[in-house]
Image (cartoon, rainbow, N blue to C red; front, side, top):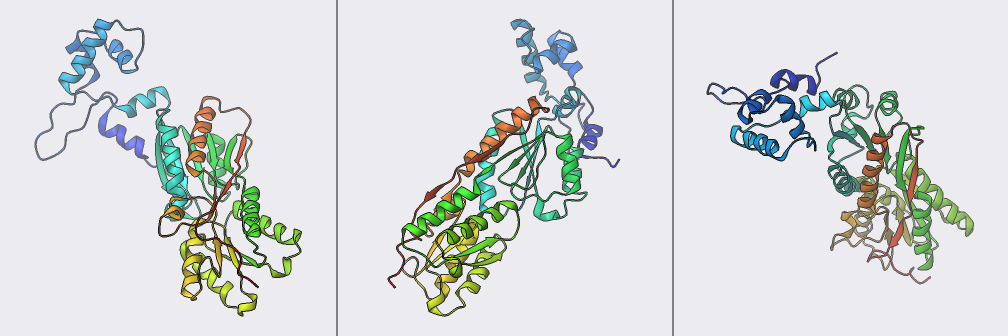
Length: 364
């Protein structure tokens, strides 16, 4: 097997080594556990117990060890300790596309949840390896992770299925991977999209068009909810969907296609499947010389920091992204403690967050 990061670091430091020296000067000897023990006048096992915060050490010995660590400048080799304990305290977080604002918000919650449990997130961007073949996942496996969080849309690649079968895992925000030992924390896409349509309908809109995402079960569910709402009100003949990337550029392109119709067929409201796409829709509407929301209302989905910007003030569906990330981290901590328990799916119910991009349908 090719050497992974852990293996290379172990070769460089050794099981007792403190920080490696660098630079042109001759390196001073590394401070070892044995040197700390000798300086403190105790055994190596006592030093180990102090480093592990064991209660089975007298206050006098603990103080002596801590003083020796301070005087000698010893830094425990967390790598060697993690190998001994068979834990790395590292959690891999695989994001679908780190450029998206949703991932910025969700990582705020994930980071808080993991660090409060003594775990360190190690982030990788799946966009850089769409096939998820032997790069991101293999690197995660080499790191001997304590756990894995799959955030956003994640294709069921064989390598990922193998990984979640071997590592305690949680799917966050996506609905694409199903496994009897993998927890899911996501938003209720059907309820959120229905709430968005109810908001637009209450404002008098009937000619509502939809900008759909191009990847993932969550976006499929939002599209299904849109169509179900239109069918229920016998407006399906006025329904129109354009599908594109879940980016600002994708939303812009899809909206341009929706707007390339006679004025009498043009939407009075456009519901976008995510906030990033909705920002692109806003740009396309304004480039077409139309006023928001006086002539066309625009609705997003997610509740990201992007939509909250003062110059945007996007009406959207708030899915409590930060809270979702924190909950996913908590679920993973529980999964690490009990890897064999049955999977739990938690769907957070979104709420409509009206802002300045939606208003009453234009008269007539």
